[in-house]
Image (cartoon, rainbow, N blue to C red):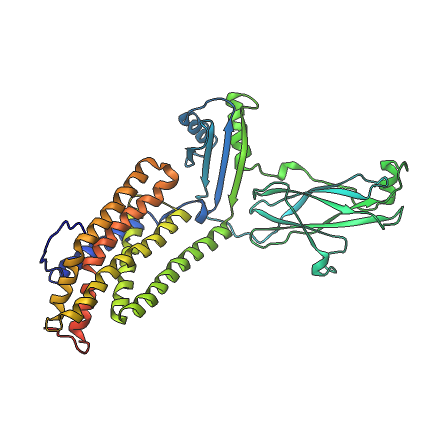
Length: 443
């Protein structure tokens, strides 16, 4: 195996106090940065906001797009070209504190085709729901009032598009065979938002009629005492971010210049849940590593490895704050990757120390630890350096989407390499000096 450092005799354990100072300084800098920046720079996944993909019918450069977006009131939006040259992704992050939402969506439009049924075996029902504060996540209907309906009587409507937003359309088919001619039927409608709030139910009615039976709207209105359809004022319906930007582009470049290929929204409650889950995923990963290392080696090495993991994660988070890297699900993936990478380095060093304990029983523990670190130094440096090169290239040419992931891992690889040498084994040494284990020569 290639060795950069041949037969080194560096006293790493003796330098542990200086290493503690370096680690403490890095942690302090990270804390100061977090305070100065008022926390991390969370992305849409954790703050809520919109991700909109536009396709332009002619070539428009990024600066032109940025200018229109800023003029529309979205100066903090992140603009990225992707796919074809005329495709752009625009991220709009919620910067204001979310207002607690306790009200559900409203049914703003609903109608039946055909009404009366004119002998058709099925009718098509169109529904539109709107929520001022949150995303509409579900539209439901029932032929029985909701307060009397059983769970199996309530049916969810498949949205007509795949993207979640504050304004959702749903279309469903309803079988009319078996219903009596001349009968008036009621469809009860309601919607639920992403926070779990259920809106006030509404209803529409339709009449069963035979083929060719002529029935005027006036006659239907006299027979149907409730709504034939629901049509509420659009003045209350706030345009989505995508619609606002589309209008701004068309105002400057002309109608039909742009289309919205995708518009996704993340509501405030969903973003809070993602934050909570992200923290637990990282902590669970660390716990699994503690169990594995304790089983593979000794409890003391396991605890030292977990302390090193916390050390690596906290310093990396501090550097993320310092360099104002956006924290999103990709960043969490990088931190989880870092956990695996860091523990691997620690295991390599710990395994060599364990082997040397068996072979060098007459040597004192500090000498054995130093020997183990020196023997694995070349492997540790080479592995870290090759990983660093790959991540550095990714950071340079990978674009904004991958850059946060690669930069986070660059920080993590450097800190993880440092901790596997100056944190894990020295902590075990401190523990052994304070409370020696059996069969170990400490001095």
